[in-house]
Length: 113
Image 1 (tube, helix red, strand yellow):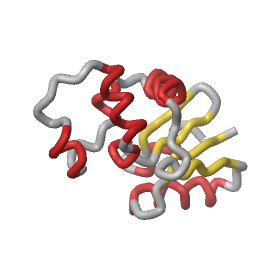
Image 2: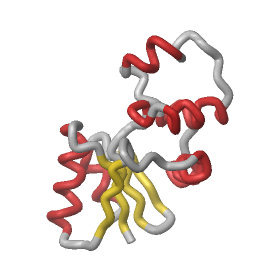
Image 3: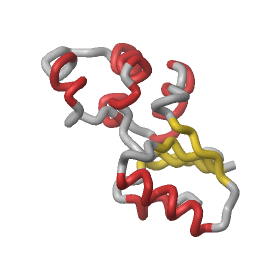
């Protein structure tokens, strides 16, 4: 089953959702700001994406700049920060079985659906 981690206030995330709707395939929407992934879920997601936790952080967010930008954080600390402040998680993220992409640009989603 395809899953999208979605934030409706984000234009890229809305475009990613539209790509999935247009595909005609079944998918699940996870509103991650309300239904925040656990540390284990986020760790697994990062593994699927094949990136480091830092690469999943939205570094332009005020929360990042004010609280974390100048600190040296371990991977675990970064994951804990994203769970505590889900706005820090890059979006949209789409998972299809054992593959995942960050939909930036949204057309990257087409690579895995």
